Amino acid sequence: MNEVDNVTAAPGARECDGCTLCCKVLDIGSEGVVAPPGSWCHHCDKTGGGCQIYAQRPEECRQFACFWVQRDDVPESLKPSKCRVVIGWAEEMFQLYVDPGRPEAWQQAQVRGWIEAMTRQGAPIAVSINGKVIWANDQARSVAANRQV
Ligand code: SF4
Ligand code: SF4
Image (tube, rainbow, N blue to C red; front, side, top):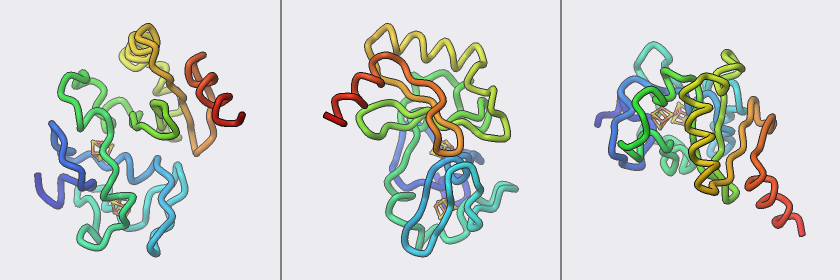
């Protein structure tokens, strides 16, 4: 794992290996870095160079590692740079952040298959594009409702 390949700090079972999609789909807004969800962070070299301020990147970038990079039992086809969906965890549920350049990406068979398998296991899952939730399973709606009570 090196600074070019790894735009996040949290060590995982895998390496980012050229993927930078979380630098586009996540909402980063701290320590002088403003990257609204769906817009590339201007510190990201999308040609493969990764984070250009790696040593000074914000804490939220240091903390983030997607589910694919953390777990080598997640199918290779779900690598974010391939499927254009980043699987994260926030607000007590899986969050699928979809590349707005490929808004249909979460409907691909491998992504839908993962959603369906995890839903059968009872996992709460929400799907968002540009920071807006476009779909959530019953478990996620229940988690959200309980949070509002
Ligand atoms: S989305 Fe995952 S694999 Fe891609 S750069 Fe971010 S942490 Fe690495
Ligand atoms: S500061 Fe670096 S790690 Fe954080 S979003 Fe921007 S390019 Fe990615």
